[in-house]
Every structure is written in C-alpha cells, then in structure tokens.
Length: 90
Image (cartoon, rainbow, N blue to C red; front, side, top):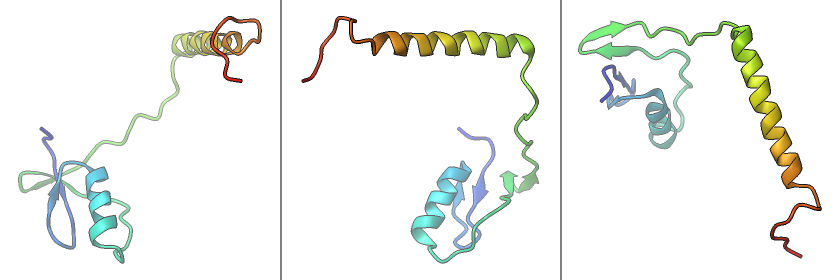
C-alpha cells in the first residue's frame, strides 16, 4: 500500500500514483490543463517528494555495464549468424 497519495484538482478523487492520476485526467477531464507539479499528502499534511538521483554512476558500475552490454551484443550477433543451427522461416 502506498503511504502517500495525491488527488485530482477537478473532482478531488485520491490516487496512489501520478500515473493513475494522469490516466484519470486524460479520460475524465479531457480539456484540463497539464500538470507540472503535484502535491502529495500524508494524511492531511503536504509532503515534499525527493527528486530522483541524477548523479554519475561509479567507474565500477560503468565497467560492469559495458561488459554486460558487450555480452548481449555478442549473443545477438551470434544468434543472427547464418551458419547457426536453428529454425528458419522461409
């Protein structure tokens, strides 16, 4: 269960996520203005939601990601090779 909720500023329905709220606004309030910043509530108190982390990843994480990505690319390339056995749809 979500600890924080937000609500529609037109009909005052409560939602657990901004995705649900935006989906509701698109379907029920078609002519409504778009929302840039939404307040979240903990009971009656408005809370500040922290921004997502936007720092640079560590060099170890970047190195591991590059190894993983090269493995994925190699497996895709080898799977698409014409001499690899497998089902072919002609």
